Image (cartoon, rainbow, N blue to C red; front, top):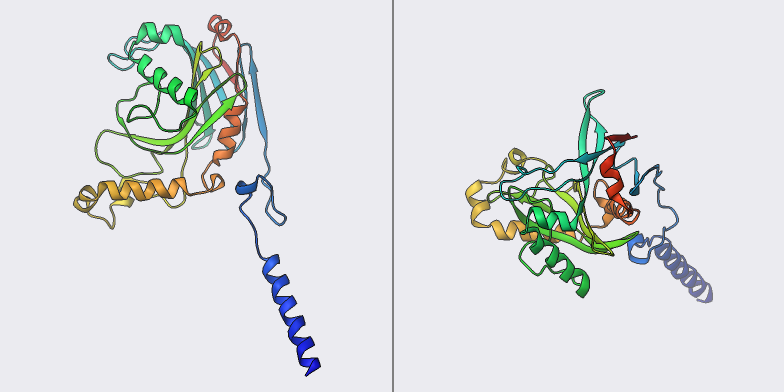
Length: 283
């Protein structure tokens, strides 16, 4: 009987050890990398021109082009743009061709307001969120510049992020002109921020995708009737929004953590000097 008790005790100890050894916590919950997790090679590219500096990982893009954009009175009907700093993120596509993967824009706030007074509503909305520390927009739509030819379908994964000399909000969204599903081909990560002195508006727009979202319109409606989607539109969007909000940052491509790190590395310092220079390329 005593031998049986000893064997039972040993068996219970082995079960307890086995259970503890199989528990792996999500590193995003405690900020630590757990043993046994696969390490991801990070290859940072540093950009430092007079007036702007930042870093990005090669998973995000292979190169960037820095351009000085002249004022554009015809950008979007009643929403013209002032001269500004424009940075495109590039990836190779179809051999040696280059496709633009994302963009970073820096606008002088005073000129932005002179060219388009309606931009003031966006800026005031952003300032209100940052001053209150809230991730809920004062208006229905989250702050977003430059203006788009469509409205925001939704927003998710909203977070306040600071950069070297400023702060803003990052979130996921998709712009549409009509009732439409969330698609990987249209989903974007955006950061909308202001320098601490409120002199410059920073806008980053980067495509992202999620493994559980459909890529294209045709694929989405292959097994779903449009009439059913239209009638239950809010349910579909709410479900997808919950999916994105509850997904770890590492599940997205590129990971949201890498995009946040890009934002955190931004330093806007005397960008007016850049307005005197020609286009530049970094890669």
